Each structure stands twice: as structure tokens, then as C-alpha cells.
Image 1 (tube, rainbow over the protein chains, first blue to last red):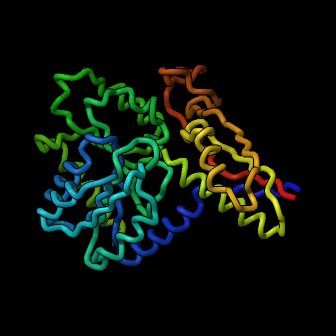
Image 2 (tube, rainbow over the protein chains, first blue to last red):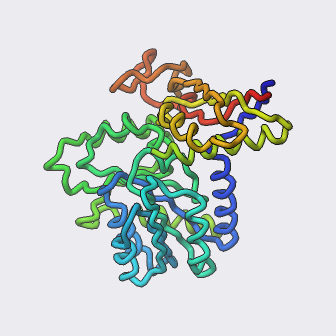
Image 3 (spheres, each protein chain N blue to C red):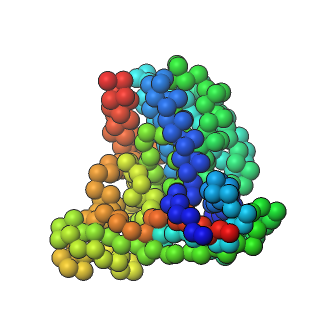
Length: 218
Length: 113
């Protein structure tokens, strides 16, 4: 006998992600899932975002890494509430891990929750966390052909931060064709060119987040 | 890759529906997986053989229906497969698309006794 089902394989994760989204919405917290390959500048971007927005928004951070507390210590030094998740080998955060972290954060006192996912351009795409906004960082040294290799990630996000633009003179990276590729695949996406080294482009990125926070409160 | 949680998700969906139907054995699980989902069939089978032991699904065959990626051009509305390394519409040479297939990732049905 055949039983028709048609159910997403990760539906259990999706249900928990919806629960996380409800918890966050109840406290008017804008959650942002920050995804990128290892070394693209996720922690650096989070540090710059905190510095740019800390007088306009109350910020918390969830740090996802396979192992270590290095990134959480960096964030903690800024005086921002942070929870470190060590996935112990798992290549992505999932809704259950984030659910456990929400209890450890003062949600009622936050406007923005930055969730740094595990460095990986494949798996995090499939696991919703309860975030309102997905963003990815693609850095100049990674090359301009990444959308061909990871289309699902580039198509899934609302914002793409091109980091390390200070390296453009030294690396072959065709900014125009990269923009054409990603906007062709994802017509509504916002693209930001930044350098976490020089701070260039950070204000535009921070303003975009600030307006998303304002929309939540409206 | 995350084949283990995927396999666990798939197994628990299959077991839930089989139990609801009062089945005593699952003989097959039919999966629909888009090309862009990046899941490796052999790994799923490997994990499945291991974690399904002692359940209704032990020994079930896993059937993968693979769906190729398809894009739909915003300009001329035709569907096409993305050419390797060069993303433009074969009809109008524009590049502005929706992904219409290739991201499927679900348990389509199970076969039970």
C-alpha cells in the first residue's frame, strides 16, 4: 500500500524555527542569520555592526562555531550579550540549537539579534532558525564565481555583503559581473560593498539594518 | 554535509505516517530531491541502514527522484536549465530569473505492508 505524504524532510526544524520566530516577534527582536564561508569576515562584520549601531539599537549575538569560544570572547569584550553555540562537528546551526540559546539572552532588552552561523555556504541554507532576515557575506578573495557554485545560498538571502573590497586592486574580481549574477538570481537582494578593514561601506549596511529594526517596531 | 539529520528527519516522517496507518512494515520511502539541495544519496543510504535498525523501516528501499535545476527567465518567461558556467537565458540572453525547480527536498510517499 502506498501512503502519499509530501512533507519537507526538515519539517521538524521548520516547526521549531517558527516557534523561535514567534518568541522573537513577541519581544520585537529583529533576528538576522549571518552566513558565509570560513574566513569571509562574519565576526568582523558583526563587530563593525555593533560599533555602528550600538547607540541606535540594543544588540545581542549568537555565535555558532564547530568548536571554541574565540568569537564569543571577541563579542563579549564589546559588552554585548552573547551566547556561544559549539555544534561539535555539525556544519550548520539548526532551530533547536538557537532555541536553547534564546533562553540565555535578555530578549526583552534587545532590538537586534545577530546570529553568526557556522562557516559554510551549503548546509545553513536548508535550516531555518527563526530569523527574519538572512544575509550572506561573500569576500573578494573568494572570487566572483561563487554564485555559480552555491546558487541556493545566493538565492535565499535578502542581503549580500561583499567584504574585503580594500583588496580589489590586488585580486581578480569583476564586481560588475558578480552583481549581475547575484541580482539576476535574486532580484530583490540588497548588495553592500564593505571593508571591515577600513570601515568603508559599513554605514550603508548599518542603516539598512536600522531601518529593518524600525519596520519591526512600526 | 548534514546527511545524518536529514536521514533522521526522513525516517521520523516515514515512521509517523506508517504508525498512523497501522502498518507493520515500511518497504520503500520515496524521496524527491532537487539537484541544488546538495544531498548525497549514498550517504543517506549509509545512515539510513544504520539508524533504521529495529524500526518499521528496517530494510526499506530508498528511492530518490532527482529534480534538475530549472530557471525561468523574467524577460521572456521560458524555462531553461542553467548552462554550465554561463548564466544567461538561451532565448534572449538576459539574466534575471526565478528558480522554478531544483530545490525540492521532501518525502513524497511511503510504501507499507
